[in-house]
Length: 93
Image (tube, rainbow, N blue to C red; front, side, top):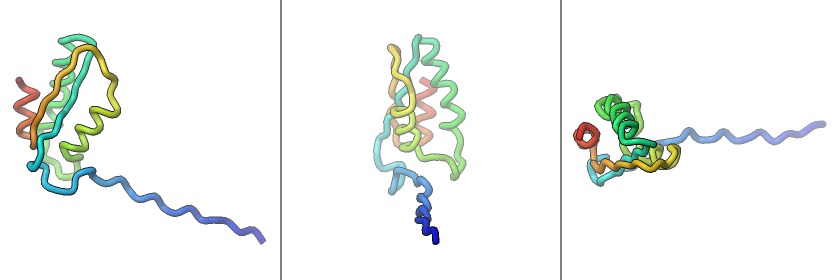
């Protein structure tokens, strides 16, 4: 007789936010090797910030991803906002 332990299913990752996104300022941190590349990073984030799809990650999830998964370079910028409209304004500045 061979007995095996059946592994438990891992829960699917959920949003890190529990409440409404509008309740707190959230930093979106962007860095690049040059000023031009920094502007390019901001331009690439704009379409995402403008999107309203409910299936997408919250602004807090995006902030966490930008801080923990991106390289840190000499040129940096931070946009503080509490909602997508605020991030659009900040990224366009």
